[in-house]
Image 1 (cartoon, rainbow, N blue to C red):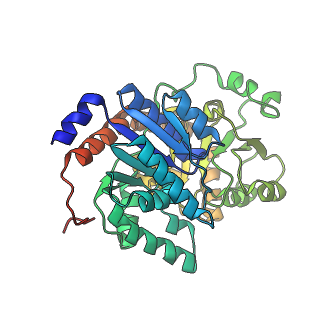
Image 2 (cartoon, helix red, strand yellow; image 1 turned 90 degrees about the vertical axis):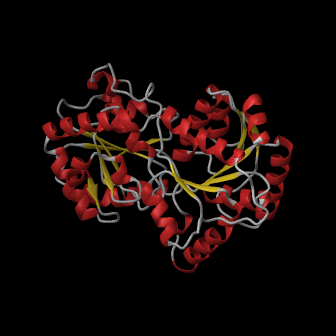
Image 3 (cartoon, helix red, strand yellow; image 1 turned 120 degrees about the vertical axis):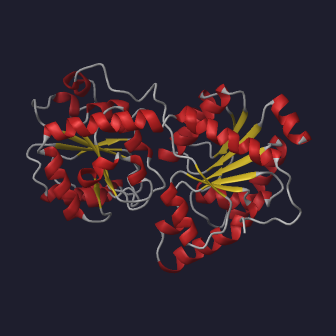
Length: 392
């Protein structure tokens, strides 16, 4: 208890070890860090210096340390583990919070239980892989769980997926939260919002023409290839589809896109695109709990999702028949697009109820408060000599 009282007096020091540095994970970490700084925590973010996370975390008030790490495990893993260990010793944190599979791998190998450690998968790595690679990833997660004091999942379905994979751990589920002061319905008209966007969106869209937006890294995970196949067969009239983001699948998606699909590229602020949209679609193959749909729903924009981890927990129960389809099924996605784009009144009602749910359940200040209580619990509890990672 002495350790807890001392850390409470001087404020907890938390080191966030993070890879990747873009997309939803970067936004989650940036928002969490900003809330933690406001609460008086001393927050350090160790991440690769290239990418929006370093700048965003610094602006949020965190101390940023360079941790050169590639997105996937490779021949540099040993050096990445050593560097992570050195940063952790220099920062002397009360808690290490490792985000996503790569940081979870390097961080837990570096710490090995010597500092209270939280691992947050942000979607399981083994769900992204197939065959032998998926088996190896699941085996590592089962083994590495001995070196985290808690696995923090962003949805109950993500936790259940870990348990089904045989991971024995002490678990916490804390939903993703968003900054509700930023993500809210726009005051401007839809026409004014669209006119403020880059060309070709700003060049004028006829009144009544729906705009569908997909916000996410252009990658296999986010399923934009499935969306493009669905778009070819959906009865969408003159509706426009905008892909907001960049990533490794950009060139292939551009090559296969039907006419009229807009590639907006990466943007530091997705709000104008979300607020100008009639519908946000995220056809992911796997997730923990995706951030973009929460941001859209907080703005009053209805969403269409695939039934991956976190989706059902994000949506109001009454939305499931309209707004949830099986992953990897372009025919089901096309049918749902046809229904939603053909019924403006339904979209308005779905947007209203989605906004109510999101603003009541997914506030980042509530998320940050729950994470802080988790840190305090881990720092304050006695740490047995024999590390046991699951309640028996």
